[in-house]
Image 1: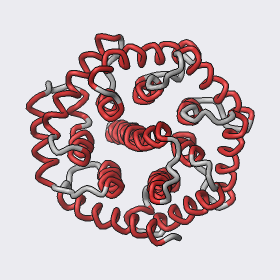
Image 2: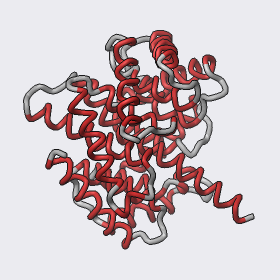
Image 3: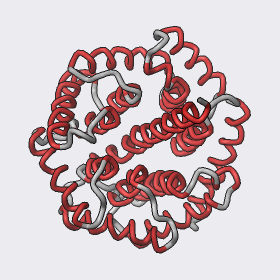
Length: 331
């Protein structure tokens, strides 16, 4: 494994161990995501900043606000990205109101949706992006009514950033979805997510769907077959089309290294592949910057925003599922 990748993993583990002590009552998976986020952004972790921001969010929201349920995650994301997290949170509250006025429903994914907008949209384009985001969601719902829901909100915001018309964007997603299905991926919510991510690239649909299947097969050959809820990992790696042999080898090596660490082994191979895909994708982008061969700027920004928004959404979904299961088992 390349030394920079190993260093990132070791830094992530060290930070996780610190955060585990600082936030004893927080969900472990959320803490793993927090450690990943800070490590990837190379920002200094300050416990008091996250705690004060969480307290601020609590004071600014009502009891059943979706921000309350994601308080630690949103606080952590804001503190890792901005010097004025409280001021940025007030923007998120405004965005939430505008999203609902546009037609979006309340959802546990709304905070991450607002955060995705904050990362990727200029102030003078906010209302137009929100309007287009709802158009994207509405068209998605028409095509796949049973599997389109709140978990698609963050990506709708990302997809609405395209210069293409909503109809063209949705048609592209549909064609990617069908191409992936022909490659053997089963229809469902996971495949829809994967097709959304791959639609960020203008590359030939057949070529990128075949490459995605190749990555999946290589993972399976190395005993790293993943369930559909972790398909986001495949999408991130597929977008990096420069040298797939090296990229996939790095993905496998980092995943296996994570599996060998006591604190990560229990997460399961799917989550470890997802974490590894973020680390490898970020390293790839940094290498391109250093070599002055930066991949298309729009795609680069999209990947970084996807890493923040989609990994957070995936963690939120898994945490919510775990909480629901625990509740049922306790009855």
